[in-house]
Image 1 (cartoon, one colour):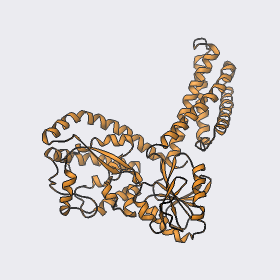
Image 2 (cartoon, one colour):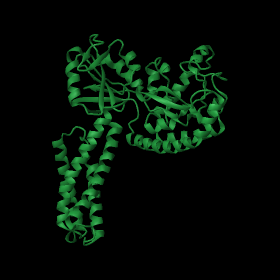
Image 3 (cartoon, helix red, strand yellow):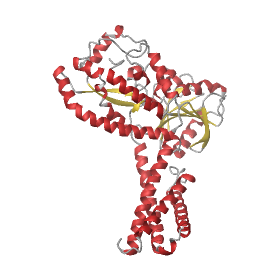
Image 4 (cartoon, helix red, strand yellow):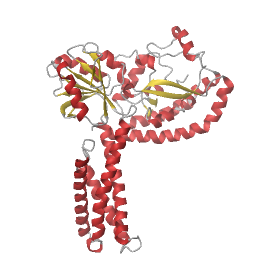
Length: 469
């Protein structure tokens, strides 16, 4: 496992292990004394439990013993937990002797704890693995992977990956680089493109990573293809040698293939985890505010024009994933039909549609747009993970259908409620390329500090209505 998922899973397992240690220690103590009243020294037991947790924490992060967690079989999981428990017991005994606590502590509690903790930890680890497998096998949560290979080795490559790849991956398609096999299905995986149209096809589909295994094709011949994927913000795993192109590279494995990975994006995974935690807290606060204002906004919308209170639309999220975005309705119910009639009055060059004094906007809609109240329901999208508090602007499906590889890279990060284009006067921008430029500027310079600065500036934009229409 690589990237943000690796760090997040390590923290989840660490938290589960700490909980298991506390529960096992409590059960072992109760089994020894049949209650919690007859312990010789309650504070002593508390200190020993803390030592167990400290030793476990050091072992977890210093030796990274869960690095192969996803790949481990039940037997290997049990072996890893046994080693963990041995270190836990020996480390705690050493600390206890150093602090002169060992003579006062019950050996039976230590013995019971070792047995209970191993059994309980194995159960917890396997339960988490089962939940993760179910989570990644449903919806758009798995990493979407395309396999690029040659005709003679395409099937064995797909078969090998299906058997050896980690469970958080989903092979969504294949490409034959030396012959047109488009439309064929190999082991349940459809061949979607060939060498000539690979970038055109991949630009318009949900895609996170690409695995390239072409031992008989010149690396130089694939250089432009790899660069094109990099421009789209798609991670490329090249087996085994990567041509000399710019970008961040790392050596690793995919399945059991040795690969050099080319990444044109952020690798600050711990910061991304913090970003997600901020999104969850922020979305919960935002949903509370939304709950308070919804009755008043709903009444105003209903009195102003017929139709539903909320508006939903399919938008394009991170790396091409589709999701439903939610807003308070600010336009007439036939807005999409009228939009086609207003195309020649579009005031922005490129793929977006913007129009001053848009006749589709209702009176209440104009107010809630000016104050950004219409966007409050998007806090639900943020809580679900479809969006972030800060990110790039999520395009509509018809915009995305016209994207080239340069435009596509702007969706390599999760779209946001606000972003660079918002604080730069979103309705004052009259060229779509300027929107793309701002989004790529955000992606290339992303940090938690930048997110905080954008959020602070967004407050000013909302209060004074600058650039809002």
